[in-house]
Structures are given as C-alpha cells and as structure tokens.
Image 1 (cartoon, rainbow, N blue to C red):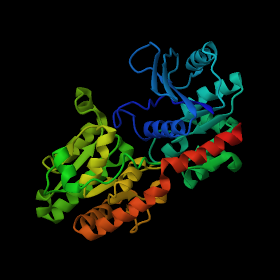
Image 2: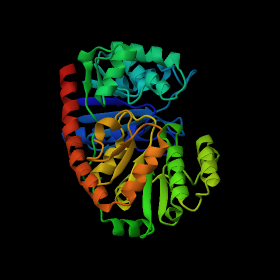
Image 3: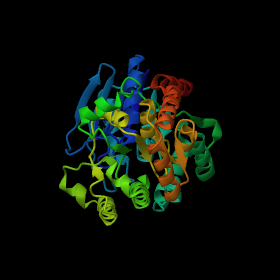
Amino acid sequence: MKLAFISYWSCPLERLGVLNAGGMNVYVYNLAISLGKLGHRIDIFTKTHNTKEQKILQLNQNICLIHLPVTYKDPYLDVNPYANNLTQYIRSNNLHYDVLHSHYFYSALIAKVLSQKLMIPSIVTFHTTSAVKFIYGGIKDKKREKRELVIVRESNAIIASTELEKHDLMKYYYGDSKKIFVISPGVNHKVFKYHAKLSSRKKLQLPQSKKIILFVGRIDPIKGIDLLIKAVSDLTKKFPDFENKFRVYIIGGDIKNRNFWHNHEVVKIKKLISSRRLDCCVKFLGSKAHHLLPYYYSAADIVVMPSFHESFGLVVLEAMACRSAVIASKVGGLKYLIKDGFNGRLFENGNIVQFARIIWTLINDVKSRSLLGENAFKTSQKYCWNIQTQKILDIYKKMM
C-alpha cells in the first residue's frame, strides 16, 4: 500500500518539547515506522522549517520525509498555496497514493483539497479540536470550528484516540459515529523500557539520594506545571524537611535559546518558583533526545502529568512502559489510560490539595510505587504500536 501522511505543522524529526513539538510528532513518526516495517510505502509531507527550499529525506527504504515550501496570505486558514505545491509535486513525480492520512485540522484542510483533485480517500486524526480546547480554557475560534465541521462531514474516516474524543466529535461537530473509529496511539517497547534506577541516575548525573518528581512535556499553560509547583510548595510548608529530600525536574523547551526564558509561560512559572522559594528544588532541564527519556522515566520516583486536558497522554504511556509510578489529572484520555490505584493515581482536575496528598503518599511508599509501576507496564503492553498499527491499517483497507 502507498500512503501519504499530511503533517503540515508536525515534522517527525523536530526536537520534542520545543515550541509545539510533542505527542503528534511522535505519533506520526511511530505510525510511519510501524507501517514501513510491514512493507508499506509512506511519504510524509510537512512544511519547510527555516528555508523556502524543498528538502527531501529518505528515512529508510519505505519512508520518505518531504518538506515543501509555502507562501501564503493567511498562514492559519489559507491552505491553497501549500495544497497546490503538494499537488504539483505529486503529479510531477508521477506519484500515486491509496490513502491520505492527515494529522491536525490544518493538514486535514490540505488533504481535503488533494482528495478532491486526485480522487484519493481521506482519513484524519485531529489530535485536538478547537471546541474541546475552548472548554479547557482555550480561545474561542469560530473560523477554525467551521473548518473542522467541514472536515468531520467530508472526511472518509476519522481516527479518534479515545471514546471521549469520539463522543466530543459527535457532540460538537455532529460527526457520524459509523465513520469515527477509536484507535489509541501506541508505544515502542523497544525504546521505552525500564532501566535500573541508580544506574539511570548515574548516567544522567542526577542525585542518587533525592526523591525525584519528573514532568515531561511542552511548557504550555494547559500542561498544569503551575499546579505541580503549588502542590510541592504546600508539601514543603507542611513538612519542612521535605525540601531537602526532593527534586522536581521539568523536561521540555529549548533552554539554550535566550528567547525561551522570555516566554510568557516560562516567566510565570519561574516567578512562581521564586515566590515559593523553590529555586533550589525545581530545575528546567530543557528538551531531551527521545532515546534518553526512558532513563529519565526510570530515574524518577514519580512521573506527573497535571494537565488541564490531554487528548490521550503519550508521555504517560511512555512512562508506564518504563514501569514508572504516574500521577495524572483525571481528564481526557488520561482517564482511559489510568485506573486509579491500580496502574497509577488520578487527581481531580485542578485540585492542588489532592495532588499534593497523592505525591506525599507515593513518595514515601516504595512498595506502592513498585506495584503501580508493574501494573502500568502490563497496561502499556496493550498499546504496542504493532497492534495499533494493524487496527489503523484495517481502516485504510476499508477506505480503498
């Protein structure tokens, strides 16, 4: 099968945790790799980064990453310039695809143009939608919602990560349940696996004797990093000795870039850390190479995801594959991944008191952390990329 992935905003080779690079980039890359291993050919189309020149990278014999330049009037909603470039590229190279799979609404708008011009079935994975973002504190975006309504109506199939996402697509976008398929993202167990805690800390030059609380993700208000700082602050007030025993490490963001420290959210978090006198205990580590993340997950006593919303929560799934004890907000896809008290812990969205209490309980209970981690690993095995890819492949075949 020959497939075209449209991933305009998310190049799979971007540094994770920098700007908007995150779970979507990981999803696109791993799905392509898994499909390629099955012998399918995938061309991934994305925009150029810092140049207007076309750039083509052959990732392996079955996967080609194609960066195409774009000039536009409206970089947000005018997809025609890029869609025209893409159509021209496909025709001039005599390329033929069985299915288009787009990622995010903007890519789906491009795929809609291609689907009509080239008569190819179009499948979309939204990853997130405007209506849902608005519910969790985002800005109301009527233009985008109108475009998303069209995408939901006209796409041949939609892949949702959870039953909740399917419900939201039906509720807010009047989606047809018969063409919305729930298939969760996967995790690569060859990469994300447990490593001994002490040796991981030695490798990463992390303190051996401290309790480590780890956050991995974009530095974004929706990620709830402020909740983590406030929860830890409450614990240091209640248990003064706690300050000497723990460290919070935040992985994400380009800390070597001077502009990073002027980012509004970073400035806000830094002020909060200083006002709570936690400068000695909370550290920004910046983005880390993907192959190092399993060592960080393994080195941590607790991995936290205090997000106000997550469509799925790939970081949590990665941590679970590494047998980490995870604490997460009871929101979005996290409610489906974690069964509270069995393979992780959940706290009510925004409830700092409950969050702090769970941190304190787990940080002092090695046995509970170990049991949660083992059950988390068993859960993660249900989300192997090989299994999830086959499910998606079945959808492709139905569309042909």
